Amino acid sequence: MRRTLLFLAVLALLLGGNVALYLAAEDLRAHPVDFAGLSPTERLAPAGLTRRQFNDLTLGFAETAGPYRVGAFGTHQIRYFGRDAFGPDAPPDQFFNYNLQTLGLPGVRDLLIHMEARSTLPRDLIIVGLMTPNMHNGNYILTRDEDIPADLIAAGEAAFDGGSSWAAAKARLHQGAKVVAEVLNYQLLFNLVLNRGKPIARLDVEACGPDRADAALARLKDWQRALYARLPVSVLLAAGILDRVGDCALPAVRRLVLHDALRADGSADWLFGDPPLLNEHPLIESTRKLSFGDEAAIARSLRQIQAIATRNGARMVVVIPPVYETDRPSTVNRIVTAALALVPDIPVIDDRDDRLPVEAFYDHRHPKRAYFHDVVQRIRGMGLLPPPQTQTGNAPQ
Image (cartoon, rainbow, N blue to C red; front, side, top):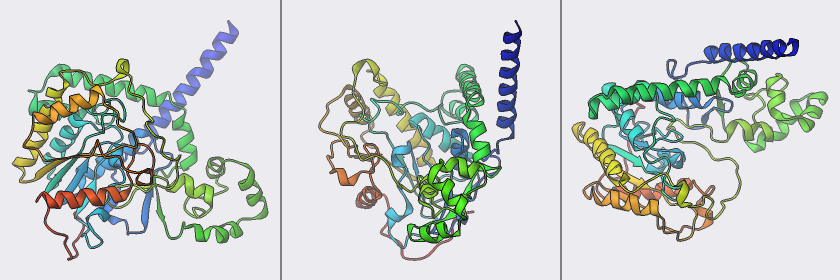
């Protein structure tokens, strides 16, 4: 009995601590970070943020900044699509990448409805990144509630589906389940300690460059260098022995804080990772996430996005990137093809069948930034964008 009571007491203490940490975690949606204020060499380093906080970086900025001329919306597959794809002279208000980890088409619709109400919707072109079906066997095409908050889902339902009370209640229940899962996750405690009360770091990539590593190492005292050689860098950062801004040129610190760090345009930097693995995701019929009949739901979501763009005087294009794979006919590919046939007037750049060489990918899932340069050229060729601009512009406020 005593051991049971002790166990329950320890469990209650840990749960209570995690609840307190969750409530104390900074709300980056309510207090948005200003991407537009970053210089070309500065990055936002989100290492250590929870998934909710990472999403809130983009959501908070989407609610308060803009409008940009062009916006890209989709999953992490378009994460490395940046303003540089529009040319070296693209003005600051040319482009922003509003990707979220698993943002499917219904979630894109909900986010656009939300931005429309706040007058931050892209004013010229909306680029919709449709996840390559073979990448996750059809997943994250019709999903939305992993990364879209319940209030945005409710607004989208109200705008297009009559405000179904069941859909809104389901969104709130799912959101509540995500909160519980995050509270029970030890990552909250780790993040609080790792970040030492500063959830987001602003770093200059020139100051963090590999050429500065020797100088950064020379600044450390002998005992610090000894610990750096023996202990995980996350422990040294949490203990305050190293600083993620001041010591970012040290290789291990740089890898931790600058991989997937965010640029002023919302895109990310690739720093390291495993080499691309051919056909990384298996296509197993019993686990596919699209069913026959879903082509109508995909087409309906695309039509709803098109309606939002049209009534705001913007154009729309769908981009389906390639993945590193061989020819793999699949049920999920056939469903997406059937869906696109239902909306023949919506422009599509469909690169599912492109077999790019391994050098064109960061990993199996993510094409390199050069791919998106080519995408922009093709969008211009379709007459959806004017020729490259040479004048400078101000970032939208």
